[in-house]
Length: 114
Length: 116
Image 1 (tube, helix red, strand yellow):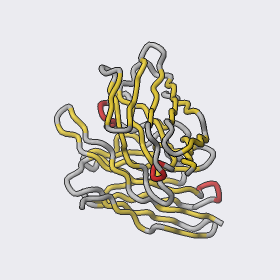
Image 2 (tube, chains in turn green, blue):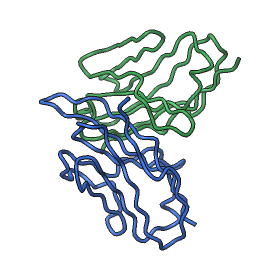
Image 3 (cartoon, chains in turn cyan, purple):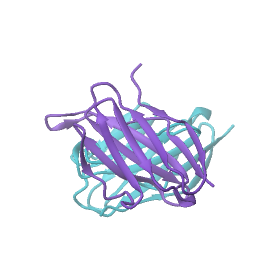
């Protein structure tokens, strides 16, 4: 089955700086790669996703890149703000949109220092 | 504001007791997932349903866990008997498959289960 590795487990950055979280996956048939943000006491919420026919996708301060050859994808957050502090999870799926479930990485605790 | 709801939000029980967690998917969604979150294992897929039919429960311990969808508005996850190692946060998520497309997965707030 699929295995998703995520690094780092904790990331502390100064407010206004950029944050980068990286994930690798094992199943070359995976074609959908979402990123979720989880705040304390809440369920994960989708913030951005990318499909295997795209190399990069951007939404305001958030961007995701995908390298299918190397089987890794990354989340980039620019101009970080205090409200970006949360746990971020990457995931992978063989099915479009994750229709058959997602395999998650272990998460990155992002801390934005004021 | 459509959202997935889960009850109870918190449950403390003793080892050996039966536990039932409930989920109400977003109205109109035809796919429901159950995930378990622990510090050690992270988020793991336990089972999922489409149009109320179970499609995959390979992530679920078969001897004590069972998942059902009595109707389109209710999914249940039952543990009998519960054990301390079942302590975790259990999330339900729902989504809509239409044709070859799928909406994103919308997660509920979770049920925090503590088995003493």
